[in-house]
Length: 324
Length: 256
Image (cartoon, rainbow over all chains, first blue to last red):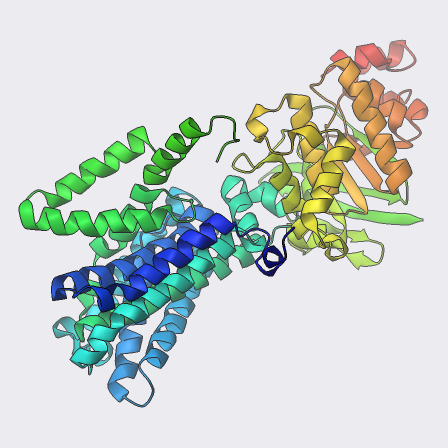
């Protein structure tokens, strides 16, 4: 074993590490090298945020197999908590983001602890209820959210421009976390819970703790994303943050990319963001219908989405290697 | 020395008493067999001991420590682990990962280097070359061995085996019986096993407890228990109990 190898964890393959560092370096340098149009800047920054949310959604939805249709609740709660803290202007702007993440994670834990004992469709239905209840309550809670007219945030153009890098670094952290969780004790516990919750408990997996912890982490990440998202637009309002289509979008990204795979949901988020712009511009009346069609095709022909296609190709190329 | 103690445990499902005031003791280094007709409450009793379901009344102790009230993962950490009658591998994980789950989340003393431990357990049950396969590709007997390896990886003091021999062919049954003896003799793990195949159970158990309709109806050495009139009645009906002197292996195998 060469000497440098022992400085990175056993589970981290050098190939993944190389791709990861290269991608981060290219994206970091991009705005310096190419003059990004405001539109491109906008698309890339939002893509970073949505890739991060899709990866974090996947921790609970993919690893633990608990499909949440309520993650907009954490996106919005994190966003509004960050917005209120930003308005006070007493701390550097990343402190409100972290605060928003903590509040969102705690909120996730508060409704997740009682509902995570439900499994499959029952949990999913509960999350729809949580998401909608949160939307309604916070829309009417004018003192906190400013009601339907929303809140304006003190973000200047320079800070807005630099959010590109903040979103990128945030994504890098979330991607590392995804990989680490998948390969950790927690990750293996979650996968066993997904497969058979009772058998997992019977060999010692602390089912309640694992699920609570991962929903907290997932909610916190999505909450931070909500804060950065609101900062980017210097504005936040409930229907955008809490809309049911927001929750659905997290699920869609993961399904398109590959639920339960480590990086698939990120690929799904890229496709989702690109496709949405294209479809909204070209077929504004049809775009939701086309999403539906895409979803049906994925579920029917390749349940692991883009990742499934990649695995197939990889298996063709290297037929003697084991399964994924 | 008593290792595990079940005290007056009962479990009701609505009006049905699945387990009714059952007490039993497992001594250190002992193999205790539990037999009884279908629906006698054997598996329910296991679920209560393992913390999979709470008892309606009574309590379970490991040494001085009360297990009742702990969740299943707490019971495993204390050193008691069960297997399932119908094997329940994690189908999304490889054979090695399945066993690694047990090694990672088992009793705290065994958590170091879980992958190496998982390899050891696979070798112990004879599944080493299947480590990187998915459980779906295994035969029934191999899946039973996997279930066993996963439970052993948790580092138990007490192993609860729910019909690990049933459903395999006679040669495999003998192999499995040997393996169970090795677990006790070489690793010092005390075992409670439920089995329908009486011949196999009788040959390996030090003592046998008989359940019927949730009640303990007999307890003792295997040879004594099979001659007990109550046991014969439970298995074969009253006519049989009056007319002859005991259950013999082959007949018992076919009985309900």
